[in-house]
Image (cartoon, rainbow, N blue to C red):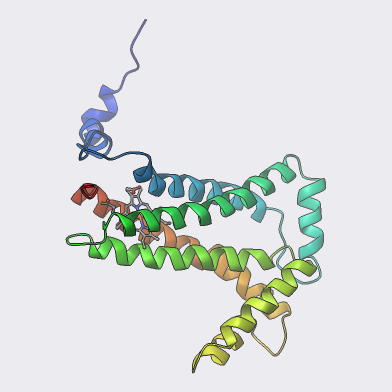
Length: 218
Ligand code: HEM
């Protein structure tokens, strides 16, 4: 059987060497399933990007149409309900996985020299993932979404000094309304995902450059 032709691309891009140094790295002894949590988080994020783009085709971020557009996606659009469910479950999975990944790097002391910056970027990524979940929760614009956001922004408002200011910026007025939905939608689709892509790119680049840390000795 003929082998797939990879030489053409390799000659032009050096793709074998590039992929080789990314995929076939030596890993220290004792590395196992716990070290796959970062990649699993990335897979959940990629799923979110694809399913999110699909949802955007039919979602309308205005108080008059948001709820109906979600019903339309779920009940009328072909595979809409399935894709919405994948988006929902991937986001839940991402929160759990990023938590496990953060805990594993903490308990295995992977934050120590020379990986301090990888850890700090990870902390920012964690906050962005939480922000993404929080802003996405309002978008169906139903009772659950409304009251959850009411409680969430209320908690933010209780923070010392900056709390009330953060609450006002998030809500965009005295009560949750059109401004809030627009702001949450913008954060959810146009600000947080590009930031995650950028930071996760740097984060993973650093992991590839530095190699994965050896698990602590028992
Ligand atoms: C979008 C979120 C994130 C993605 C996609 C991601 C991705 C990855 C990947 C693929 C690795 C390679 C090794 C592994 O899977 O353990 C890694 C390593 C690492 N991550 Fe993350 N990560 C994220 C969030 C975080 C968070 C929240 C922290 C901690 C606050 C963190 C800290 C680290 C550290 C310190 C390493 C180096 C581990 C070692 O060398 O043993 N990451 N990350």
